[in-house]
Amino acid sequence: MAFQKPTGTQDLLPGVVERWQFVEDKARDICRRFNYREIRTPLFEQTSLFVRGVGETTDIVEKEMYTFEDKSGRSMTLRPEGTAGVVRSYVENKLYGEPDVSKLYYIGPMFRYERPQAGRQRQFHQFGIEALGSVDPAIDAEAISLGYQFCIDLGLKGVKVEVNSVGTPAVRAAYREKLLQFLTPMKDSLCKDCQSRMERNPLRVLDCKVDQDKFTDAPSILDSLDEECETHFNQVKAYLTEMNVDYDVNPRLVRGLDYYTHTAFEYKAAGIGAIDTVGGGGRYNGLVADVGGPDQPGIGLAIGLERIQLILENQEVDVEAYKPIDVYFVALGEAAEKEITKQLYLLRQAGFVAERDYLGRKMKAQMKSADRMQARFTAILGDDELSRGEIALKSMESGEQKTVKLTDLAKELK
Ligand code: ATP
Ligand code: MG
Image (tube, rainbow, N blue to C red; front, side, top):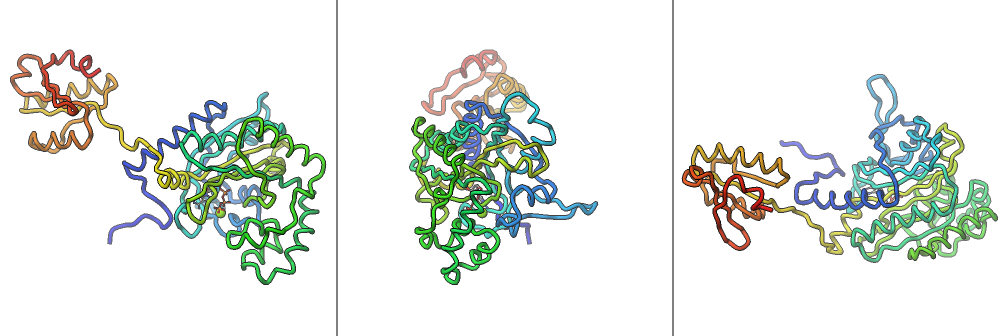
């Protein structure tokens, strides 16, 4: 029996991988314009970083982590999300000592042990940003607008932003009591996960994937905000309005991670099935201190790239999946073989996309191969042309053929 890929993973083959590169290019491009710089952190970290950073009562830490013991008996975990590692690096490398706000981004694989379905994998990919060192609500609005504009740049339609304030830990403690009063009478009707969430972290119940309708009349956390939280939230909303970012306030939006304070937000796209959240983020003013750093604030977001791929497909967004080649060389005879080996290399050095046959095929089969690669030109070299220092250049679009000097080949292709 041949080997198979692990459950919940994907091979991204040529033809599809170009669609991923398209998305990654857009991510890098928008980060450049918003002045976020790339950071690359390890794919695994000490387990305790995620337990601390993500939160003990989260789904991630409770049941989704890929944890293993290394050969010296240390507990390691494949990163389930990007923020904890970035914050660890920010602290370890003392980036907080720099004069400007640390504006960072990452693109890469994350690992969660989950039941695979469309848009849910065990190895999946996120594009995310983190801005560390500022409490200015303008940077909340910047983060939200970056994710929003990313979707627009990709050509996606109907992406909605939902925003909320989840307050400070003190605000949440007060709200927790009100929420429990609302939830307790309906406890038996809640799903099993939510019944246990109710004990450990009742806010998380509002994030239930099974039955959202039950919570339409739940008390709103917005009624529990103190003045500082309310002012911050109002400023974020005012900036978003100013920027013309299309958002809705959703007072039941809590996030799956424990570290958020103040602003929380999500991007939703209609028509990708049951799971409609593409990404989200929020402010995390306690996190840097929680993982042993100074008391520095932060805000970040993460967007799931498998889900972006799903929407691109469903909305039939035009993604240039295959880039044609410039020229395909066909050699007729041994001396010509030698010459095209050199010409191929010269053209590649000069920046052209060039290819040849490596299977010893007949001319007709080589021309078919050039067709499959959508070559703009074929360059055909026989002994006659070679003796005159020339080569036949055929436009695959018009069928027109002319003989050009070998030394002029690059000029002609331009
Ligand atoms: P969900 O509610 O769908 O489980 P989450 O709250 O666990 O999402 P986050 O931790 O906020 O998700 O991650 C941000 C984004 O990363 C999600 O909106 C989603 O697009 C993507 N994502 C999360 N888990 C997976 C996964 N297992 N497979 C693919 N994408 C994922
Ligand atoms: Mg999840």
